[in-house]
Amino acid sequence: MSARINVGISTMATLGLVLACVAALGAGDKPAQSAPEGLVNTLQQAHALLARADGDYQGHRMKALHHIKAACHELGVNAHCERHHGKNNEAQTTSDEQLRSAQALLQTSLQTATTANSEHVAHHIRRAIEELNTALKIK
Image (cartoon, rainbow, N blue to C red; front, side, top):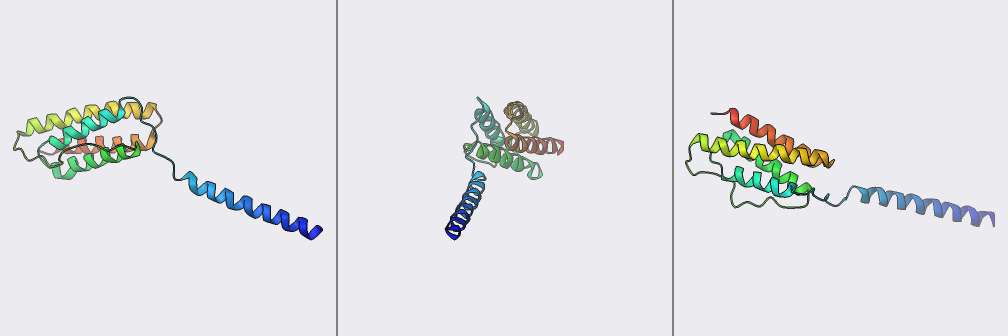
């Protein structure tokens, strides 16, 4: 009888350990967080502005686009946009203004993401803002 109890306890302990491991593995597969009101729309507007802007800015405009896309991905949505390479031969001042407008939208998005404790989203938004700061220094 004592051996049966020990086997039963051992089996239960093993089962508990397996369940704990499965639960821990599943915890990493969290669903995308719900987006605070207006955040997705603001990110998509910033993405569209940057996509239309002309000029490469030594790759910093594209890096900002990728960070915005990553922030949208964290929220479980796509950053809709028709193209990523502006080659409309627009004036540098026009393109710079589009980058500044996108930057202002990202600042608003950063405040919203930070208030909502969406740290991964806020991280990507901060990186996009940094890329735009660097891009705007390039002439």
